[in-house]
Image 1 (tube, one colour):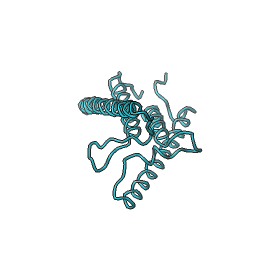
Image 2 (cartoon, one colour):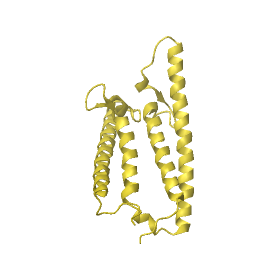
Image 3 (tube, helix red, strand yellow):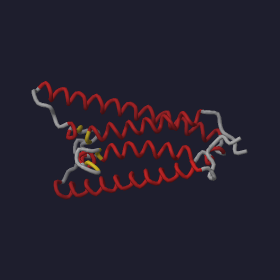
Image 4 (cartoon, helix red, strand yellow):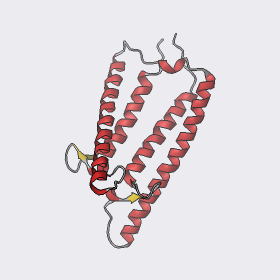
Length: 183
């Protein structure tokens, strides 16, 4: 009886190919974002973290923003990794697994706090704009945190921390399940 996905199963190749596609998407978006921030820094002497990804729509105008593609591909890519890489975790000693679980619990808590914080600030800025009589450009809302000279786009920050919460929570869940055996 097979417990996990094996290399000779057709599903393994599907997960592997989807992982490669997600990896390509994540790397492409990351390099595009770094390039855009560098150009903005050289032009203006400042940048907003994630703004270029929130302003760029792909593949057509009024479709999905690059932050949405990054969010989606990171979660799907993580799921594919958990399906195809389970054998590498079987032999991890329990003391190392305990340390990983503590780190994952900490990471999940920190990312949950950041996602909620960014979401609340985003909602507060939207509400403040509406109260003043104009609907703000939601894609342009920023927060000057943690460094006032390098603000973050709130949509970008919220999506990235939410993805980190989902991934770290799922990793923590998987690490606490009963361990599979190779035989």
